[in-house]
Length: 77
Image (cartoon, rainbow, N blue to C red; front, side, top):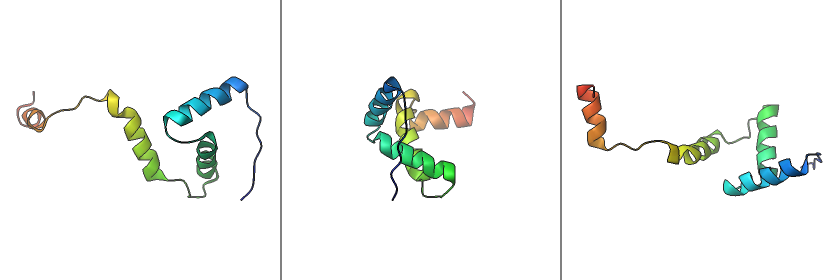
């Protein structure tokens, strides 16, 4: 496995570290996954990305009960 050195603004790196920590990952892992995706090597985890996005969006979606879903489906309300 090769090492890669990049130059980024201090504030960008700080914000990236905070965001990665909030998502339970590291900046290194995020960059590795993005490079995998960019290179098209197929080693990035699409299911993991879906689950990460689902967790990120979980608080922004209203939850319905089973009865509410059926009421809307059958009555159009």
